[in-house]
Length: 104
Image (cartoon, rainbow, N blue to C red):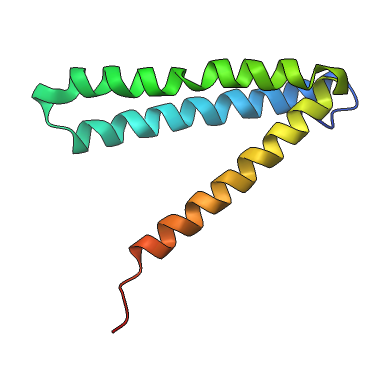
C-alpha cells in the first residue's frame, strides 16, 4: 500500500524496500521450514515442485497488470495488494476452521 499511495520517489523507494525485504525474509523462513519437514533424500524433488508452483503465478500477475494498465501503476499496486490481503484473510479463516476440533 505504501508503494501504491507514494507521493514521491523517496516514499516509493521505502515501500519497495519493504516489499523486497519481506519477500527475502519469507524465502529464508520457508527454506528453513522445508529443510526441517522434508527428508533430505526428497529435498531436491520437492524444491523443484515448489519453485514450479511459485512461478505459475507470474503469467497471472502479468495478465492482471496488462488488464488494469489504464488505471496506472499506483492503482494496480493498491488493488492487487487489497485482493491479496482478502485472499490471505480467507485462507487464514479456512485454515483456522480446519484446525478446530469438531464439537460433538
